[in-house]
Image (cartoon, rainbow, N blue to C red):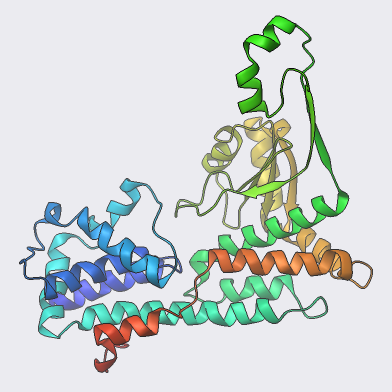
Length: 352
């Protein structure tokens, strides 16, 4: 097999495995762009000459095209150059071909990004046009499950749906939490008054505060798909899983999150396995509840029913749309970028 075909297969694998934002393929594209256009002659076999600066190039472009930059660990970011991804030897082959073909590999990568973002646009239309009578939770999830380009981001749509629902119900219940200092030692209160104000948000004279209960998303997670997804100011941690769980991942969930109470949200087929694993490793007490997708679907239907659609349903759909737009980018900046770079002239870029 020709070297360029081996390199292309490796690149296709990276593109296929990437989430919607395609951070790693964009980094490869920008290395190739600078290798092709810069006056400095980049030696692609010399990884250390571009390892760090290429992250800056990637972030400049991804900030414009997808509205955010990569926040994964440095170790995860550098995986792109390992032997099972795009090592310098394969990058050299891509670079030589790309320079000879006037940027064809760059165009190929950005065409893949455009295809991915076009799929996001289709889902966004469904979300933005949904009403209480037309919205279907399982249909929205299937947009991601059934589309190879979006499948890697299925966990994010689950998180959005869970967060929007939990927040809507908690607000509707008007749940509150109270923080109160019970120690009446005046000297202790005086000595630690700055701490009480800055950390607890109260003071020595007013030692009690009541706040609305609220939930918060932890933000963009890395590809490891572990860790905290949501937390609440009433002491609850939420972990959303849509993939098969192992005892190791369950251990991460139960011991890696500093919370006394954890709720796990999972697909229905995983519930029994999770319960059995928790029982085996003795962490059942820490898990407050296991919520399945059927539970979520039923609660969505209640919120969107005639009974509640005006005071719960409209806020639920608004929250789904807002979180979707925060999580997933549009392709409005990509076509001008492709035109600026001249990629549209390379007619074979889509199939290469």
